[in-house]
Length: 321
Image 1: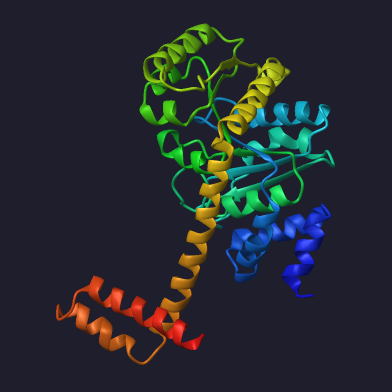
Image 2: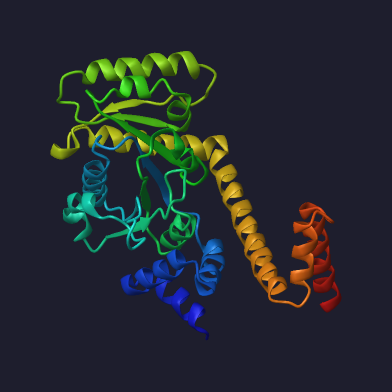
């Protein structure tokens, strides 16, 4: 048994040290990490993947902590992936807000990992897909993904999560933010957190008004849930909305479509890995300098050379087989 197969077995046995090691492999984008994700992907597909997005300051981390505690009280095993902006010095995740999650992560039925965005746009980390696959295969019932909090750029969460919660708060101009198309389109559930503050009802009405104008044709009309995460208020209603959305996805067939999209993503990643590996091999070869100079001098077009290289690589593979 090789090292990857051994780690797969330990992850399936829900060994926390193995899960942590596997996530490190995935985040480093190592060859072992890629092989690990490919091995685990067919074994995943059971967890409810929940994206949690919204502007900074709306209380996403506090909401994740309180939601996790409530899910654990109901017997669910919870995985948390918190995507943080990267440190400009070390490139690692900045963990300031994770202090708010200390209460939940002490539970043996909870595993939390911060992922550095490393400049990747879309509110996620490049490693998020592999990390979700690993946690799903490890038997977590619910996987919560908290995005960076970058506003409209966070639409990438739609490609990964089954249910996406957009968190807003009164007094931060979120009723204006909600008018922006990117925010409206990604949310299956809207959460007005810090609802004990003045203006919570106004924020909820503004969101409802925009949803009524833009989503009348949809079978699923996003609910608006008011919470006070710091005190655990509204969490029962929120979990109920998540369960209803999961049921809707299953009955409508959209859950299978999401899985199909994830499968296509795995194939795309494998193809990108192959092209990258072969390109590095070509660059190390004797003919690379001549090709590069031909393009630099204008004698040949870059796209033409790239297509020729790709054909040569695929023909070489076919001849080799």
